[in-house]
Length: 114
Image (tube, rainbow, N blue to C red; front, side, top):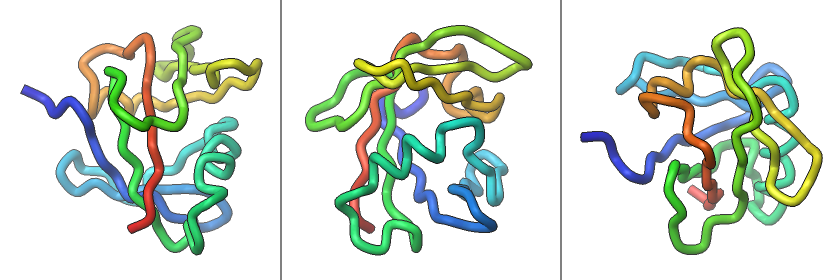
């Protein structure tokens, strides 16, 4: 059974946000297509976030989440999500399926200092 809340530690590398997760075989996996801008907003209050921060995420709501991403559509094996309450959309690549069997209708996220 998968965890209800997952955790990764994104950091800034080569001009974008990336993360490593040895447990699922990812190394310097980049966030692309407007997700980096959402991360920039998410980490505004975290000093030195570009050196790394903890990102909690879940397909289920959890206490004190900061952002809710709402599923919009599938494209090229990945999925577009809209930041709740905005028209801003970002694309999550097929690595999403390393954490979820199917693309969740909502993804709840929280950033914390390491």
